Image: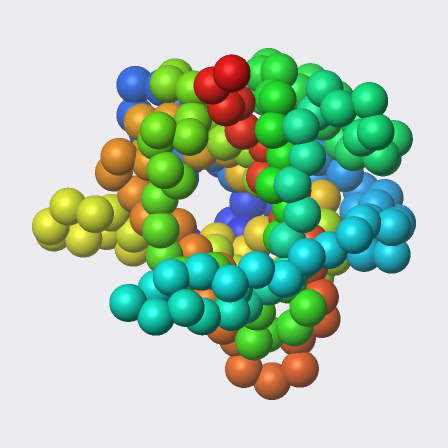
Length: 191
């Protein structure tokens, strides 16, 4: 399943009792998404992290930044983005994680969000800026179900809390010259 099927309005990719996984193209216009991408790329103090994976420490294959949405020092553009996502989703988020995929080598392995870091019942919302990148989704239960979605610039993907119990999501590496992308991941974290 790819986003070329999603030319109008929100589209449900998976359903559950909390709203499932929903793709909404066009939250921002392509021009607006590109302007936001350029500003955030240039203005955010992107960090490089290392993590333990498979019993060894490895570089995280993307740049990252994190913000509390009630921080008085929150960049104004992120306040505007948080309001746009809240208006579209009906949820007031309190945390923002940002990923900067510099090229096709940058990625995130299939995973589900850590439930102890999320407020139960609240969705995660991903706003995409910059280039289109493919997200892969797969169920954790057998038989496995697989989906692919092209996350277009200005699109919003929401994933329910319950979906994190059933689905893995990731951004695979892509061959060749791939233009950069920024993902804004809005969450409600326990206080």
